[in-house]
Amino acid sequence: MKTILRALSVLLASCGSAFAAPAIDFTGLGPTAAQMSAFNAAQNDTTSFAGVSIAGFTYGGGTTFSTGSGYLWLRNDPEDLGLGYCSEGSNCGTTSTLGNGDWNELSNNYKDEIIRLTLPTGKVWTDIFVSSLDAGGSGNNETGTLYWSDVANPNLNTLTTKAIFSHNQIDPPGGAEVVEGSIWSQLSGIDVDAKYLFFRAGPNPLGTNNDYLVWGVSLANPIPEPQTYAMLLAGLLVLGWGAARSRRSQR
Figure 1 (cartoon, rainbow, N blue to C red):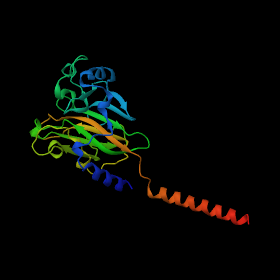
Figure 2 (tube, helix red, strand yellow; figure 1 turned 180 degrees about the vertical axis):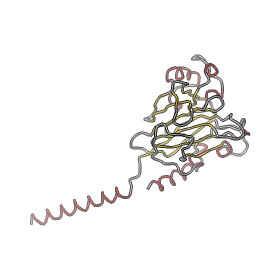
Figure 3 (cartoon, rainbow, N blue to C red; figure 1 turned 90 degrees about the vertical axis):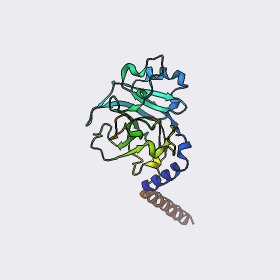
């Protein structure tokens, strides 16, 4: 059943995904671009939206995820939608400004930054959206990595449940920066009920100037496993047998 759900999700995501939007759009955390600074000052490095818990970290390797070293930064520009992580101090701007470009995105140019999403109970991931993954820097093809795990702080450097996506994969021909949209159709083998998703900039052998925003996700109720249907059918058969026996005994 999990394989079927994944295949259906990939099929749906591949149909015009660049023009779709996530059901859970993290730009809903704040009203307009001019008011994002209030969110940045108030939320620090953790928040939640529509049942999805969100945390930002700087990553020190192994299982070292450092909180308090930066804060989530919300962008809501025409081409740049979603959450980044600001670990660059004053370069990210103040509470009265929007900050400075890529420093507000999930980047590996200054520190190794991570955004972690936690799956709500009783749901599965069906789509994943990023934004502002552009050409320029890092060999004109910036990249990002998605990891998934049931462990809150795994060793990302040795974690094998991961997939790399790039600007050239997601953007249409021509190279102009657009809202990229869904990366689900570009990735395979994602565990749809993994408790945690981890977003990281890079790796890219051509440079470390990789950055993007985590725009949002879509969720669904899980499709029951075959054994669940078997148990339900067995229960209905028992109830039916019991009802028939009761009717016979009353004659």
